[in-house]
Every structure is written in C-alpha cells, then in structure tokens.
Image 1 (tube, helix red, strand yellow):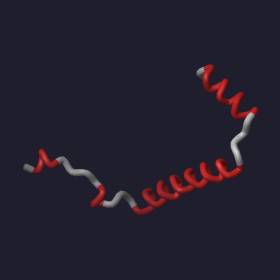
Image 2: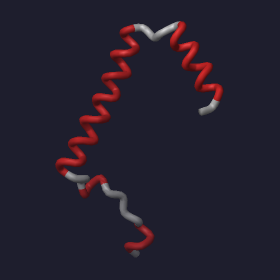
Image 3: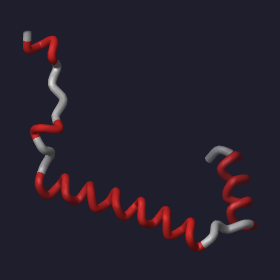
Length: 57
C-alpha cells in the first residue's frame, strides 16, 4: 500500500465527509450497480456497439 493512501485515510478519519457527500457517493455507486445489473440481464444493445468503418469498405 502506498504511504499516500495511509495519509489520506488518516486525514479522512480526522475530518470525515458530510452526510450529504456520503449520500451523493452512495447514489452514484447505486446507479452504477443498477446499470451493470441491467446490462448483465438484458445484454449489450447492438446499436451501442462500435463498428470499424475501415473494415466495412
């Protein structure tokens, strides 16, 4: 583990983030987990798949 991470953890323990910031980060993580679950359940849409235009010529 990098010593910088230990210093950041010490600083975070001394000055914890506000409850609003914790809720914001939890909401972002929740959205990411929901998107991952939807992608796993229904698969990746074909219209979002990039195509190599050089190969099509």
